[in-house]
Length: 169
Image 1 (cartoon, helix red, strand yellow):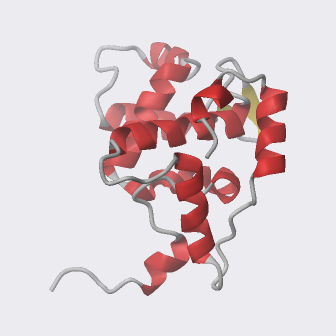
Image 2 (cartoon, rainbow, N blue to C red; image 1 turned 90 degrees about the vertical axis):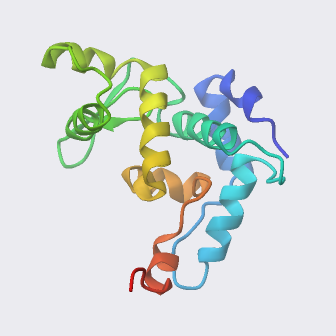
């Protein structure tokens, strides 16, 4: 099993090379949703009954930051659709503002001050942790990267969700 803490201190080139060499991209086709879950378990570390789920999710978020940006804070990337993604977890401005407001993480901040937080990697990671704890399906904000690193702990692949029994009465 790979030690995620060593990856965090790698340069972005080495981290990307690690993901390319050691990672088998997970696919979400009808035939291999199980592979996506297996990949998530491998990325997030061994699942033992005494493992701390919050730590496992934090490790997954660290892996996500490496895959998204090489864990770099001051990065902005323009997508093909013209929209920008910011910071180590490559949040879209609209998504970032929505969840900061939803979780009341910057209650007294002016709109411009909230955008300064978008480049704070530790803040982004705390926000992602809150998002995923509230709803494990929020991994879908990082769909393309999740295909590379696997699902976060507690998440269900899109095809599993389609076949799950309905909830409620």
